[in-house]
Amino acid sequence: MKLFKLDTVRRSLATLLDKVGGQTELQVGFFEDATYPDGTPVAYIAAVQEFGGTVEVPEHQTEIYRSIRKDGTFNKKGKFVRRSKSNFATTHTVPAHVITIPARPFMRDTIAHNKDEWGAEMGAALKASGYNAHNALNIVGEKIADQMKAEIKAFGEAGGNAPSTIRKKGFDAPLVDTGHMRDSVSYEVK
Image 1: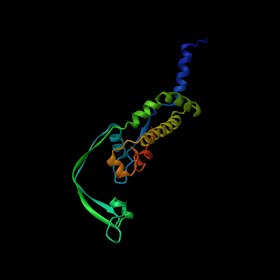
Image 2: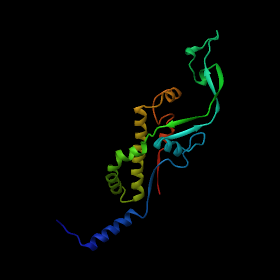
Image 3: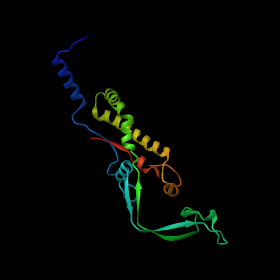
Image 4: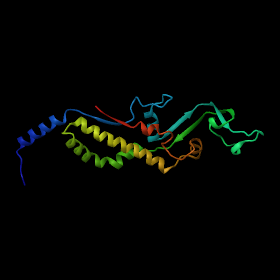
């Protein structure tokens, strides 16, 4: 077994610290600039999905679209259709109500399923980048963001939406409606 003098170890660690750099930080998730088309922050929706919660929906008006034949009877047994496929619309008042959203911990699952690999991945990224911490964290950040996107996809494939949500969306994929939240997962090295 080879023994190293304490001064040699200290110098080596100081040299490595100089190479790696000072304080560098990796953040993975949803950032301030990520919003839905209506301006709602993606981080807010992601937090509600992650931890569950209730949403108070105020009373509002909504349009319901159907398709009617020339003889005045409904096509598709009167089922609702998309606006572009309709020739008949009615306006209805939806009373105020509360929606309960169950917790879907995709962020915590990302950590639980992958954290044991991150140290080795960071070590490999540091070596590959010539011990440049900023570049290494970019490599690892991209990997972790991809892992979080995979967790969102896995929740969607498992199903489990309420029947009313399935009717509204037309499919059973929790955490997936348009894909906007999944596509907004990002990382930043500071």
